[in-house]
Amino acid sequence: MEEEEQGSTATRRDGEWARHWQCPGVPGLDLLRARYVRHSFPRHSHQGYVLGAVRRGIEDVHMPDGTLSAAPGSVVMINPEVPHAARAGAPEGWSYATLYPSRELVAEVAAEATTLRGTPGFAESIVDDPDTARLIHEVHRAAEEGNALAADTMFRTAIARLLLRNGRLLPAPGPVAAARTAALAREILRDRMTAPPSLEALAREVGTSPFALLRAFKAAYGMPPHTWLTAARVRHAQLLLEAGTTPADAAHTVGFTDQPHLNRHFTRIVGVPPGAYRRERSTGPGRGCKNVQDRGTPSS
Image (cartoon, rainbow, N blue to C red; front, top):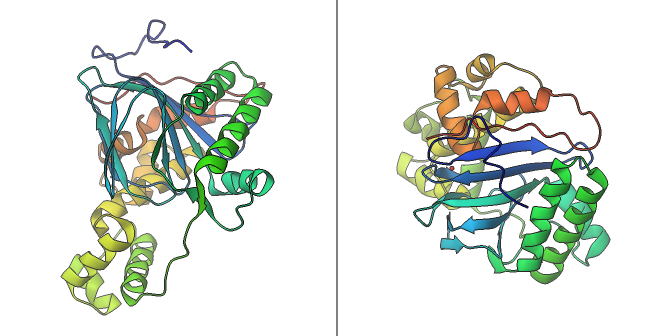
């Protein structure tokens, strides 16, 4: 699949561009195809899975256990709620295709194609697998051409192959006191997203000290509470935008100071601006997979 920078009227001068869309023929799957040079993704996590295949250049992915360098032919696999960050690993940046399947969709494939019974996941964060990397790019090609049947077929084939070669069951959270404290703090932040307490007040509410809460929260979720809250606000904003809410209203609803504040964090984490994200999802489904392009990328 050739890059389509040439036909874009909004490609940045530094060559960055991005497309973030959905394929109605494959419910539960989001797709991102992009080229980034200066853009870097801050530490964040996803509720579902991330499966990325670099086409050109190098992507450095910062995982809890170290930094991975993803080159063409490799597949990056990130399980739900695993914190990670990303940036270019070479001066020319990187171009890639990424799949964001939901937990339900991956569980469905695992139940049909593997012996994994429970919450499926991936044992490795990166593998050298050119054939599956090519399949990920072909999912994008089929989706862009409006061929939902082919996109769904190749998506399921890729997931089944990765699970059969690298799959494992994800462990259930243990009943550790520190983990329970972190989980309680997370629920408070989620419930009070627009007016969160200070760290001291939050620690007092869950019955611990500020530094003990910081340690517990970072151990459980890989990031401090304020970073997690920013990512959670962006997630909530995505749902609101998908439902047709304007970026300005979404910013207010999730607790950002104003729309520029949402724009900055949303673009850094999702990879495209909130207005483009909303426009793509307000487009009529038409036939097969819908494809709306955004070229207004940031200056992760």
